[in-house]
Amino acid sequence: MRLPLYHVNAFTTQPFSGNPAAVCPLDRWLDDQFLRKVAAENNFSATAFLVQQAGRYELRWFTSRCEIRLCGHATLASALVIMNILKPDVPVVHFETRWGGTLTVRRDGELLVMDFPVLQAEFVKPPDKLIRAIGTAPPPDHVLQGNDTYIVVYKDQTAVQDLRPDFALFEALHPFVVAVTARGNDVDFVSRYFAPSYGVPEDPVTGSVHCALTPYWANRLGKTKLHARQLSGRDGELWCELARDRIVLSGYAVLTMQGELVI
Image 1 (cartoon, rainbow, N blue to C red):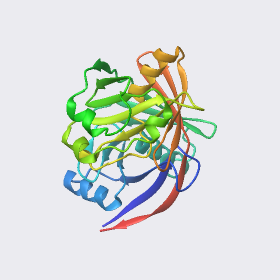
Image 2 (cartoon, rainbow, N blue to C red):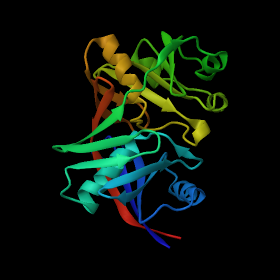
Image 3 (spheres, one colour):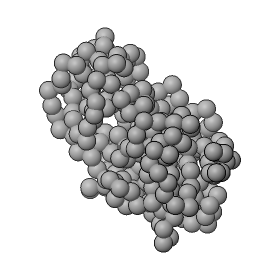
Image 4 (spheres, one colour):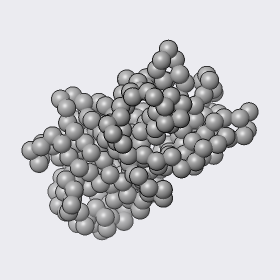
């Protein structure tokens, strides 16, 4: 069996930065365990699988361990492959997903613009295990919880970039993942994202968590359009807009590999 395979760096214009995703177009859906094995072979934080149906694309995302409910960077990567290679003149792509509903990606010059649902988070008292997991960082300002995600808010960017968490304790928080965030020095806000129990110790750039970070920072900063940066080792940039009950996420992407997976 030969499967077409593309590697795309999302939320960047450069190789060796942003969040790499694998994109695998299929003629039909294959067994879920097979898809997970393909994702494990790629060994990225996400592999996107897509099947064209009546002018739209059914889209699913897998890590090396499991299927995930929402993935921004692999959606951006999938749109780049469709718009630049599979259907190069298409200005808008509609994806049908199992949990996120219909996701739309359109061109805006060189940017790709995604329409995602808002994910609301509420203030909570953090569990002791979470506080132990974030280690020697200064105490957070507060913690929010939403969509199986803890969002830890710090006073400044330094606390986020210097964080050295205990990944074993993060994994024990399953099914929860952890995002940390603060106001940025030269952008509106910065973040990092950890999901070790899903096979992703630290995700380089996480589009989906910005569906929760955007409404929080929009309310705090009093503006609906925000510039964000994720401070992983690879880094990446996003432009976020709160549009009522939707989040508009914009970013760049670059193709880094095109070929076949031979199985």
